[in-house]
Amino acid sequence: MFDLLSGRRRESDEETLQRIESRLKKRIGSNPEGFHGSKRGERWLSQQVFKMARELPDRSRDLSFAVFEKHAGRETDAYNANQSPQSRFEFASEELKEAIADLSDRGVLLMGLTARCPGCGYRAWHHIDDAKQELVCLGCKTKFTMPPEPRWYYRLNSLVRAAYADHGLLPVVLVLGQILLEARSSFLFAPCLDLYEKGSGKPVGDLDVAAIVDGQFVIGEVKQSKDLFDEKTFAKMGDIARRLLPDVVLFASMDRDPGEFTKRRVQRLSEELGSLGIEVKWYALHDHKFEPSPFR
Image (cartoon, rainbow, N blue to C red):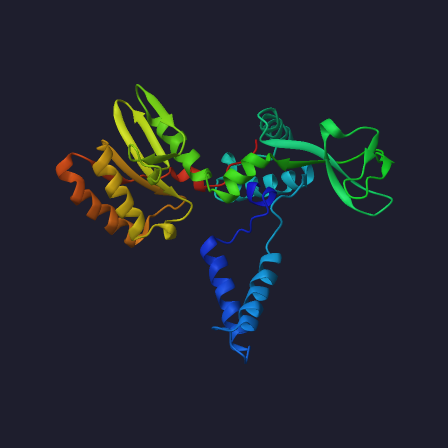
């Protein structure tokens, strides 16, 4: 649902890049003039990139309760498909309403209505706090009466949307939440940090995870996908670990399996930092985070 609300496609960033690369190759091949060292060619290439950028989904969307209900029903059906008849659940709309209400109370979801201006035809979303009997068009500023029996629409808080869609903080939140649940005696964490040398204005690196867990200092790098880990990532974390001397360095992503490349790099870094007493590991999210969860 956050993908839909933030205008993200279900395909991964890598799939998007491959799709754009393929289309660019075809269009470059069909351009007889070429573009290297040519102002006209560079302008042509910029236009192609601009056209493809316009095809990407909107950065924000407004969804009605019916859309939430449809996807929650599908989630429950997907869960029931793998259960015995005695373990299946019947979809409960009331629980979905409670979940949406909880997210609204926390400011994650904002509620409002959409209305079409009779003057210019522009349809806009109006937050519930601004939804008065007389609305003002955000385009032409025409005043008009709110339509009767409006349907409510929900959108993501802009800060939440940026954190989720632009900065990929969902896996960081899931990792920190899981560490918290597994902690036995203590858990303290800091938000994502930039690290600086004393007296220097240039950061030497950043940390997605910086926490004290049961008396151990834990740092980590978390990605949306295992495909985003590269040699530079492990070199950076190795350098930071030698400076900070944590007890644990962890790597995690939204994947059940880290893949061979990541496994080898984690093992190699573990061998390099072992003499310093630093544990290096892949931190796997629990399987239930990848499974359907019913509204019951």
